[in-house]
Amino acid sequence: MSAQKLKLLSFSGNTRILHLSWMAFFISFLVWFNHAPLLISIQHTFGLTDQQIKTILILNVALTIPARIVVGMLVDKYGPRITFPLLLGISSFICFFFALADSFEQLAVARFMIGFVGAGFVIGIRMISEWYPAKQVGLASGIYGGLGNFGAAGAAISLPAVALLFGGDDGWRYAVASTGVIALVYAFIYYHAVSDTPKGSTYFKPKKSGGLEVTSKGDLFFYLFMNIPMYAALAVLTWKLSPTGVNLLSAGTVQAIYIGLFVFYFYQAYHIYQVNKDLFVKAIPEIHRYKFKQVAVLDLAYMVAFGSELAVVSMLPLFFYTTFEISAVQAGLLGSGFAFMNLISRPTGGLLSDRFGRKAALSFCIAGLAVGYYVMSQITSEWPIALAVLASMGCAFFVNAGCGAVFAVVPLIQRRLTGQIAGMAGAYGNIGALIFLTILSLVATQTFFLVISATAIVTLIAVQFMDEPKGQMAEILPDGTVQMIDVN
Image (tube, rainbow, N blue to C red; front, side):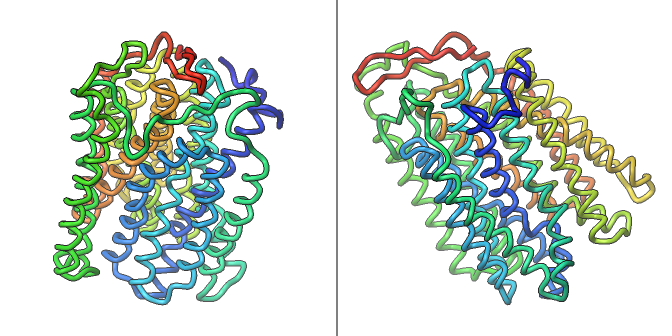
């Protein structure tokens, strides 16, 4: 499968949907990471400590964990045409709130809330799966993800210049606010420009809402187990904000959050049981079954790939700034190289998956990721800056190609559940980011990179348990007839 067959220079049919969707995703990332290249200015404005800066980085990815699960359910039920504009519109106002903040507490709350926009990726994945066949979905998803993720690099490249253009101590505020305006305008454009499916196609929806449908009792318990890390990650965040951390939350509030997380897990577990209770009455026909282990492996792979990407994109400009004693603008530009690789490597990961097999491509990317982070752990101030940037971009190739390889598989598990499966994998990406950034706040940067490398090795072993997608998946049309959809 080649990019030429996707007619990328066209703006009609499914290519039009691809371009409109990656732009929506690009804007969501532009908003999500509008703080990263401006952190030095923000730190000077508020006199923030290094620990407060690291707290803001962690908060930025926290809400995306539950948001991707919720948005995955919403997009499966209501469709991308409604869900994407709603997400962009809400996020624009949160963006304005961050730009107007006048204390660390307000910055922290706004940054936590802005994590909501990070769920945008899930919406586009469902849209792409509706408009592209299995033999093209890997490359199409990779192009969507690569160009969309470039929003982080777009922020790093453009926003320092926008801040300088407005000038003064409030330059960063105008730069942040400008991204909110862009998101609000594009929300209206997207709603009026797309449709959920090609004309005459059916938009398959889950039979029930409130949790992912699984197809065996063993998978139900596996699913419940895989939900635990989401709450554990939020508990880690709460600890980080407690009096023993940065003291942003009182001891009483922390205890209340711990209890709330415990209660909410069992509340969610009850709804998951309600969605899947028929499993205890009758077996699911073989034609409608899928293996939840496929979802679990993709969750872990995305945790180490996208999780590390989020963490490194957030800290890399500051790492270059402190390691090589260069200017803030130079550090932002050099750090943007990591996200810049999305343009090439996400589509490459999807293309490798389409051509050489889903499992082989994912294994290759995760192995390269492990080596790449080990090399980055060796970077010191004695390195030539060019070599350090080259090492980071080489690592970024495998990181982002791994993301592309993961989402080349997601649409091939169960069509009507694509949003929820993408949401769960996406949530694990943010779990990884939160955990890795928390580790960064506790250890040296070199150790931080080594931890990611070791996690990648464990994930590589897990990938070997994934089955290669093949044959067909079955979906039921509104009239009750069964439609078979090719997955290879």
